[in-house]
Image (cartoon, rainbow, N blue to C red; front, top):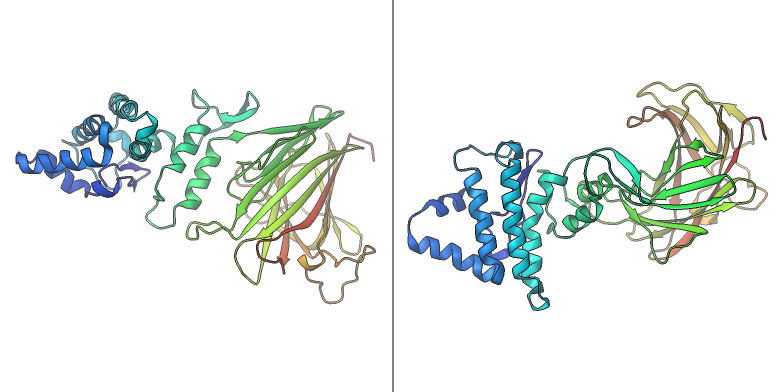
Length: 411
């Protein structure tokens, strides 16, 4: 498509239905002195972009000029033909086009201009960078503006394009949104403070007690991006995210909703609700948690109620614990006891030889793991929880997680 640009060695095409011309063919046509060919180009752009056509034509001509004397293929870095001066000039052309179709009666043309702008926006935004907390949100430290809103608009206007040669595209765009931070929620009681960032894989954390971080982050790796559904509350954080979206599969398999509350006694309760969207026999979800001090003592509780000290994992060599239902992490900052309980009787299958809990629910066959997180280089704990027999399009209260936090030396 003529509106596409290269990002990370791959082509993002965002051209409209009437301007779906191969980039090479368009290049030859732009240089062709034939008036008939020139008329064809101008009539097509005028018909598709309406009042924005002059600005769009100017954009195309500048983009064409930027590659006039340069060989461009799918492996070319954008910086080779899109320097800062060219990018600024292209932005001015798009601004002119937007202004021409800013009135309500031109909403269709305005959407087409936004689709055209996706490629240029991607050149600036399609990169990862460090995040920081700013004005109650997560924002890019390396950019001068909060880029999350721009990233959302870009993703909304991408016409299901993909930045990779293979893949459906949707999973990549959800990861892209995560790169740019997003909203942040906070609840606290006494000295316990809990933060949550839905766009970061529905992450909870950091969780601090009396100013000391006891839990860095906990999240669902299968949720690429989430949000805050409904009205916000000062007492409860609600986060929701879709799972099952991969590089090849754009379809939502489940929706997981978390409700986070701060309880008395420096404790945090997380209720997880699951809604099935696609019929499949079963699934499992991982909950991963990173702690600030990798020299802490890590213990897990087996299903017979015994606490076992976990060995030290190696990089790329996580340790499997077997079936467990709780973690206990003790560091110089304090202690975290993290308990998982299956709430829905049909959400887990009893294991051979296991005994029902006193509550009458099936025992929780949660698989445990401890390893080194590749991103933070800190120790993580993991729980993998199976889910079966959830009816289609019904929200099931599925799991309760209780995290109790204690200062050093206090049980």
